[in-house]
Image 1 (tube, rainbow, N blue to C red):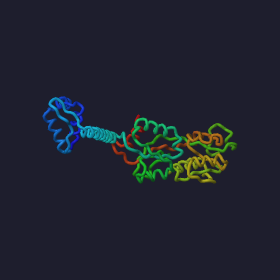
Image 2 (cartoon, rainbow, N blue to C red):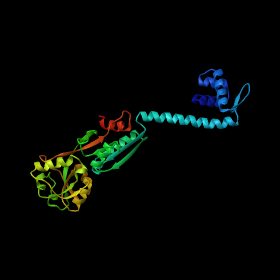
Image 3 (tube, helix red, strand yellow):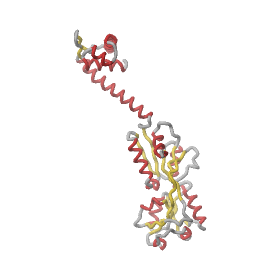
Image 4 (cartoon, helix red, strand yellow):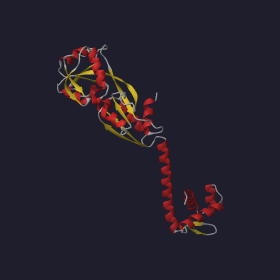
Length: 295
């Protein structure tokens, strides 16, 4: 049995006239009659009651008509789904992000645009540290991840630079340096206890941070080391020490943490990056990458 047999059968059942059904299908009447007979022969069931001027479904034909319509609908759905998949409009994508990257306006903006353009693509998200996200990308357990890092230590990965973000000083409310609003010289933090976040939170970020402090004439004295930037801000709010964080994190614990920009001479930035694995043409990942690369 072929799909055309089902289409021919449905047309004849609807028209209840062989000639009209043939005209509707764009074929000759004798071949159509032969195809219907072949179908009945294959099923070993008579589907129609025939008269000289009319052909009408019998009880068996009525049952088969219902199932034939369902089968064709399923086939049409399957065809459309495979075409959507080939166009990158269907499927799934596994997306990761760090807690600090997620706070940056660009990340929810990109996710929102992606969901609006490709509502049929299942988006699976997870939060983790930068190192864990990059390791997951390397192992093909994720498709892409928003991180505050380069991918230089992961040669199999690619990256889209979403721009650098300036770092700011995070100080406990009531701290002597929290009284000012003017840009802060980085050297004023030379003797302050630092709340650091582990290197696993961002390969490369600590290198940039340490280099900036060395240029200012000191090496930070870490009194606390936490796994994430948000955890560092919690410790700053508790009065444990000071820290340096991306400017977009100024919305975090703003009642307990005072943020100050750095003087131009000391200012430095950290990247916001979409790291990803190989991009297959027409894949959901290619659609995400296309959004970010669009002018």
